[in-house]
Image 1 (cartoon, rainbow, N blue to C red):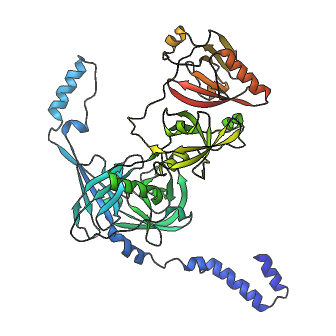
Image 2: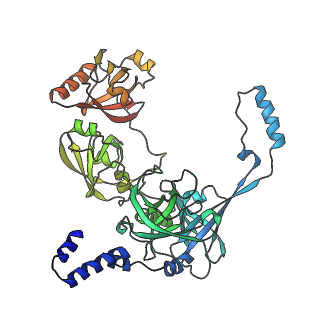
Image 3: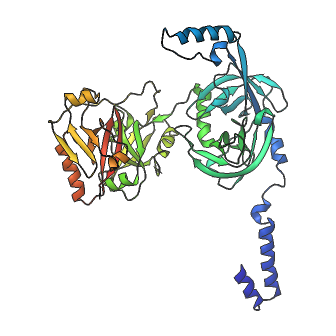
Length: 489
């Protein structure tokens, strides 16, 4: 801009100089074309959407013994009798009621209300309070703990005010937004801000993909909506980051494109039906990528495959790195569960994996995710190599073939297979990666091993090929994971 003004001063005329000056003033006065699209006030928007935003009050009955459980002591201990007499005498026996408050919003005129599951968890009674302070008893249609979402239903003869979903994929970092909720039980409150970031993983669940917003969100805002300037819900306010317990400008909200299919499934079935691939995955580290010949650390490394699941039927194997699923690239491991879960059950999808130095294209037909109780770990087959002991100083481990004494010492299953680690050097690559005596090495560089000589041979091959690390598949009491160990220099 300064160069343009200099050129104008050198003889382009007063009109050119004036035009440049006006442009600068427009830029800094906020009257550019983009700024002109901003409303002078959010009041009209709030008038349209606020009637569909509700406060949620829950009550739970707690009996005398539930709030303050008696300490546990060994049976027959004198402390047991003392505290039992104390608690039976002094603690109140009549039930008491606890109350909690949250927020929600109505998504159609029939009275379906969206909120967070943690707002209504364990509640005996749920009351929805409208913008005009009328109250309705609510019933739970369904809930989903994995995404912390719940769907309620309230009823009356006339239709309810409602709001529509936005396409959260179209929301950009820096967009204006408003949040409406019930902070600290004060009643309907409006705050404004911008979208600060997207794709946040706060370790709240397996499908984390939160928006980060800087609009003031406090306790009681949970379950309330975040709106675009068009008055559509692009996210559900769920959590805050706050060392003090109050708002510090970092709030997290569930995107509408993640929430909407969950809510629809709850409405139709009372539960969430998700697609399922049948793999257990882990992060591809730089060391693992180097050992597999990948140019960069990306994708999701398959640690194990559920027997009989869609992945096994598609030919996906432990050690494959899933690079693409249904036409969508997988840059980070945590992206895969979310993409799979949002795909239609029964759909035939293309899965691109990295296997032994090349891309392989496979086809999988997705099943329905079983319940946690129905999911079973893959059984390990038998197999036992000849008795032998070897030390691998480059990795900092000592290994041995399985035999009865080692099975007993490390409490290993009878059907366990592989090569057992019997010692780990402090400060070694193995120690840094958390390996410990009793761990079983099942594969080295994606080749099955059953004896120390086989492990040594695979390690020597990797060194001869100029690799700086070796990839191990390690079994710790049925929990399989890949570990890349760098060679000591």
